Length: 395
Length: 93
Image (spheres, rainbow over the protein chains, first blue to last red):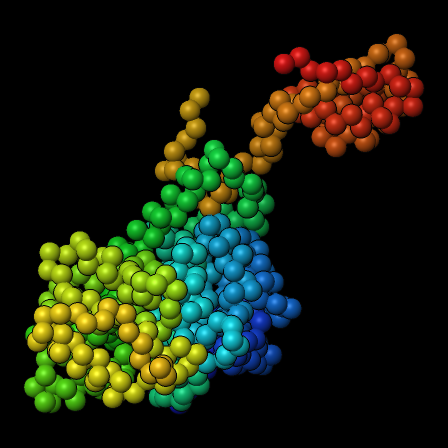
């Protein structure tokens, strides 16, 4: 199989995936730090390298609206956004999921305003965690590229039929150049296959249907129940699609990555690019004989409950690092989910939460080492000193 | 008839049959009912043109009556009738 290593930013890598996927329609609006995706893809359209119908819209609300129309018409549809762009399309984000339209949307994670900020945190997609979209988080540009290709198969699977957000960290991943191994165009096209919509579409004139009618007390609840079922199906179906992807492209994508977890006593759980920094820290602690481990959920919606329980029931303590606050007063969104699923586990590790990196504040190996030090300190005293902590905020 | 459960209906709120709105009897919403005096009617069909719910039944170019399954009782027909042959009568509860 043909593969070429190309120096690309995370954004460019995702644009390359879009070029290879060659959706029927892309309706998108530029927003930092996602702009480079739309910009690069527009160039592919202008240069005639894809036959995609590119719709340059006047806002993200229009972008998602156009995507809803296009997907309902039966076209393979993509868009991309970040932060306030995602917030502006919010209304239609929920509509896309409830109308069961398999739109794939790369989201470059950026802090939501206000105060206004353009740098990375996860407040944008974490806010959309209950919108009914599948969410996948990438550690680096290479993985964002691979997730984008994988997402097409997940979204369009007849047992799922749901939209998918493919998330990567703003600037840290989206604007850093790395060597991305691109698959052959034909191999990607073969993997995703020709799009055969799982529902009767608006352009099927022989079988006229209505999309988006009013749905009151008598049926709305049943349609929501169907959405839950699709998410439950997704957690069973995604591993098979991922296996096929891994076999086809000789890759090792995972639902939840476990790093040095076999004999770990203390683990950090973190999404996306910070896992790279954490792995570096785990390596240096391991060199000193300290049993540190790392768990990185790649899938956040549906939430990979059994994988998390399997990973964390091995350790005595775990620190969940959240790059967003939920302002519940009880910790960040990832922490809430993990604490919730661990309630069902026979072995329950002590769980602590660290909020970090809001508005793009850097996190360094020394910060992560301090988290492990805190955990081993708590193990020694047998007491959780502080359940919710903040890394790098000035007191 | 009991309504179908979530496993037996199309996903996404899609309606998979055309023209299904006809099966929805909006006539039940009516508080006032149009009644025609055929002796006065000149069959100008202004009521047919203005009716927002296509509830004026016309046969052989003549005003025939009302489709009470769908007429919501808005009274536009009575209002536009040039010879005032349509009256709105209170529905009996």
